[in-house]
Length: 318
Image (cartoon, rainbow, N blue to C red; front, side):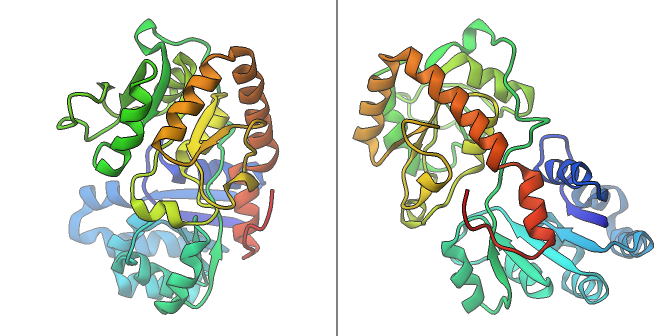
């Protein structure tokens, strides 16, 4: 099968993992970096990309949000000619116009939180299916070592643009040596231990190796009401061989079971309690981290997700 992916380029982007997954499955795959070509070609990007995609004659055209810059008319034209899928990785309320435009044009829209399925159906997207993100076995791998300044009890990697997660991070920081990294933390409260900026690729794996616990914390309050909604952070931590302590939502243990593959907390006080509990049990942490990585590689790779997507099937179980 010939697959064209139109979205963001860059080795750390999800689109690169999707392209590798397609090739792992034996498909011919081409990744079109829409933002980069838009910067280079300006107003010429749409006719040039149209001809380029048409010459590829894909059996499947997979769009991600950056493809929205091609415009509704071009996206609709391509979708009429080629079987087109849109995979939406974000949780946004209400639905964005970009997501709605791509979803309405595609033969199938895939969302990473099952609660979004009905939301987008009610907004006029005919075929919406649930498909969580996953692990890239070629990128999400354990680091061999970690710099001394990455060594800590717990780490959190994520955007600092969401004050909702401050409560959880502050609670954990009060009971252990926490390090926070990611973009957007320049104006963070002084009691949050920010140690660096954005972390990508091999650096992420080194951060995971340096910490006993890799923490997850919701960005938005509405995430706490979602069922079986897993962040990409969880998959990357599991793939990198880390011990993941994440925020529980109903159904999330279908992906990874507490005490076997990871650990979950319900609120900020629970996050601190779980942190103290597992820091006192390093041998348990090591066992769970190893089991979590093996479980993710066996059941939650991007190749397994792409197989479902190309068959227009929703994810149903581990």
